[in-house]
Amino acid sequence: MFKKILCADDGSDHSGKALDLAIDLANKYAASLVILHVPHRSADIDALQRFAEIEGLAKPVNLELKRLQSLDPGLDVATGSTFQDAAISPRLLVQVGKHITDEAKDRAAKKGLKNVDARIENGDPADRILHCINDENIDCVVMGSRGLSDIKGLFLGSVSHKVANQAPCTCITVK
Image (cartoon, rainbow, N blue to C red; front, side, top):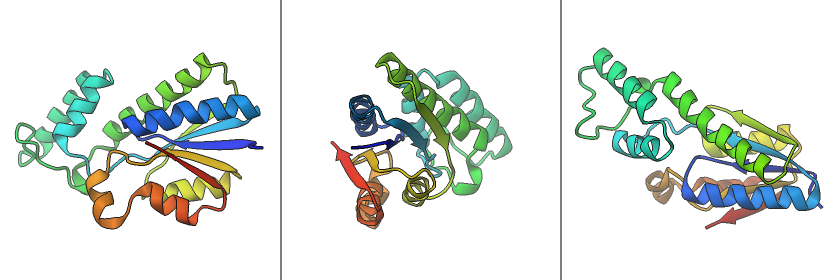
């Protein structure tokens, strides 16, 4: 039924559950799996530090935050200031994204899935997912119903909602 499955993974709990389902579906249908991570460019520092601690990335994230603070003394790490688009380090986003996609590929490999590709793309998450669906000829996308950008989603509509309404393929959202 499915030949190519896309899993959008932002590192949230819901996307982890979506990844497990995508891996199971790919195994069941002998489909290939594409894992897509789109970094969030407006992450709260406290939330980023908590995520980094859980994922074993605390040291590189804290080093990068200190480097950013040395470049911009107005960036107050202690009070949880919010990164503005211009203040976010691309190196940090790539490090976190690589960790997320590497972990996802490892989970797939441990469940016996061999045909797995991972991509990290910058931009609006919904747009990048829709673009990947078209570029890769995806016939099923699996994603969490809520990710790391919940607050923005409440006001502008969630990424999963936008993708489900615009994608030309089967869309599965996981809670």
